[in-house]
Structures are given as C-alpha cells and as structure tokens.
Image (cartoon, rainbow, N blue to C red; front, side):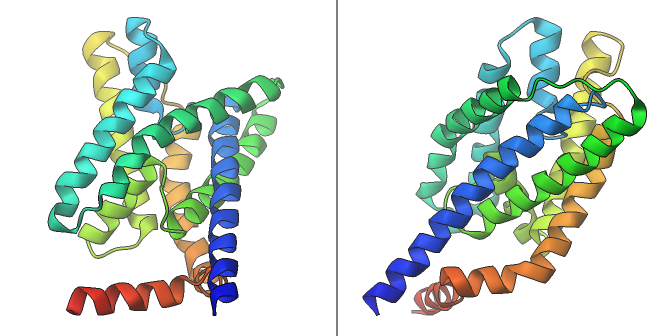
Length: 230
C-alpha cells in the first residue's frame, strides 16, 4: 500500500513538473509568434510597456492579485497552500525568461507565425491542464481559472476562457486609457483567448480520468468528499 502511494505521488509530481515546463514554453512561443502576447500576461506586459516598468515585477504583482481574488472566490473552501502560488510565480517567471533566451528565432511570414501560434496554443493548454489537474500549486492565473470554473459549476476550460476574456478586456482598457491605443493585443492573443480554454476542456475530456487514475487522484477525490461530510 505504501509503495502504491509513493508511486502515485511520483506520477503527480512528474506530471506537474512536465506541465510547468510545457506551460512556460507555450507562453514563450506565443510571444515569439509576433501576433500578440498570451492573454494572461497581456495585463503586466501592457503596464510594463506603457510605464516602462520591469515586466517580471509587474507579472509578480498581477499574479499576487490573482491569488487574492482566488481567496475571495473560494471563501470558506480556500486552502492556505494556495499562498504558495506567489513564490511559484517567481519560479515561473524564471522559466519564461530562460526559454525566452533559448528561443532566438524570428519568423517574418504570416503563415510561419500562425503555425508557431498553433504550436504555442497546443503546448500551453497541455501544460495548463497538467499542472492544475495534479492539485498541487498551479500557476496563479490557472488557479484563478479553476476557481472561477468551480464557482460557475463549469470546468477549467470555461474558467480559462472567462479569465482570458477578462485579461484581454482589461489590457485593452489600460491601453486606451493611457495611450489611446490597444497595447500587447494581437491576432494571436484573440485566438489564444478562445482556443486555449476550449482545448483544455477537450484535453480533460480525453485524458483527465486516466491521469487521475495513474496519479492516485481518483482516491484523493473520494477522501476529500468523505472528509467534508464528517
């Protein structure tokens, strides 16, 4: 029994770690497409661009706000482990900067950038789904998407669409208010806003049950339900 639990934790950490790396690659590729930044990071990117502030620092501030919003949404169901999303955002920023230095390509034709955007969307939704589904410490933006999805009795995919739409609308508002122009939003941002959430829903429909079984999360859910009824 103990070996079985250890194996389950091994797979949870493995899936989570792979998802974290894959997600950071996806967000980096989205930016490299030149068709607009990822919806989630459009807010800190626009603020840092307009006011000449450090992008990593603004990402940390926005992610911290996302964690606070999660606490408000979850109410009595909040878990203090969610606070770990704040130092997580620092690690995530380091990974994005790392892959940003590695990926030095710059395509000039529209079809190449659209192809890169497609790859970015696929990689992003796989990474987001893997990290959140393991119920460890999610990316603050994806954690908020999960909280919103649960609040509306919908899945992670719907919550992701909602948060992405909110992020894009907020970024547009910030740009128009302070510069009179839309900043950081492009065709890629709009496609990702719709595509990532729907692809997460499809990914979970196909793979989530199997991943839960391998990582022992089927039993985890049962234990949580029993604990809540006692």
